[in-house]
Amino acid sequence: MKKIFLVDDDAVVRALYQRQLEQGGFEVCLAQDGLQAIQWLTTFTPDLVLLDLMMPRLAGDSVLRFIRSQPRLAPLPVVVLTNAFMSDQARAVSDLGVARAIVKADCTPAKMLELIRQLLGVTPPLADAPTPTEPRRPIEAHNAARTEFLTNAGIQIADLRELGQEFKASPEAAARSGNLAELYGQTHLLAAAAGLADCRHLALLGGALEALLYELVENPQFINASTARTVVAAVECLARLRTDTQTVGRAETLSGEVLIVDDDALANRVALAALSRAKLNARAVENPLLALDLLAHSHFDLFLLDIEMPQLNGYELCRQIRCLPGYEKTPVIYITIHADFESRAKSILAGGNDLIAKPIFAIELAVKAVMHLLAGRLAAVGPAAS
Image (cartoon, rainbow, N blue to C red):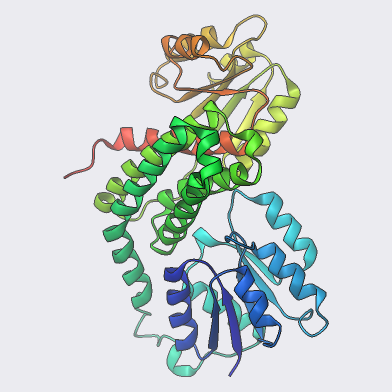
């Protein structure tokens, strides 16, 4: 019997994956964090390691480095579970050698079972395959995960709201006290559970917020009023999505066309890279008049507008966009060097929805973009039934 070593800090994820893999004929050993994983690996040699990258105490990339440094363990195939918004982290571990990097929110225990069978060359038993006349029924564990998530998500999000408000009230103090780390940990668990439950929009925004909080924990210099406001707003959007998910059911994959208008070519490149993390289609132009021409034959779901531009500033451009049919409520995020309250007030009066300061913090922009696109979807559907 092949041995799988599963390393993940989420007890729900561990239980669901363990159940599916054991039903598939594998022996499964568990570790709840990176330190425990390394302790086990000093004497234990599995056939494959399934490793979450984002864990407390010791992250998955450190565990992978340990594995590759030990001659006994170095040949082991390692499958890593990553966050779609942590592309730099994923590239770093790929350089260390991984059999496959899987976005955690997009994976299920059943998909992981099939992948591990492929990697280890294990043929599933005949009884495990569906017959031509009997299609495969939904996996019981997956349905259980969805039911459990929808039951418990309200309590989880209420806790996130409380932690978020504490962080917003005093970001630096919250970071020192451990509030920020706790907020990150709770978001990490919520995003993973939403992915397993097939609540795609919750998993997407939860994953984006998780990545932002991870960056803030690792790089406190990015903690400021802007990132604090973004964190709180994202938590509030999660609360709305949770209600929508219960009534609407499984949501389709998020898509959106984004237009960036900024006369700064470097800022455009940073914004494009940030939006690519969310797998959004984005186009950037440096001339605001060209942007108006594009609207004559192209549709966009979100605008990122620089405020200080020649010929037409961001406020004026927003006013003209708002006059076009179909764009009365399309989200507009201003990108500006002026992140003070005066600029924020002007942006609201000019029909904008949000503001982000330069230099652009890429993951914060990704969170804002996902949040406003999802909020727009919720507004279009209308309030969820009670």
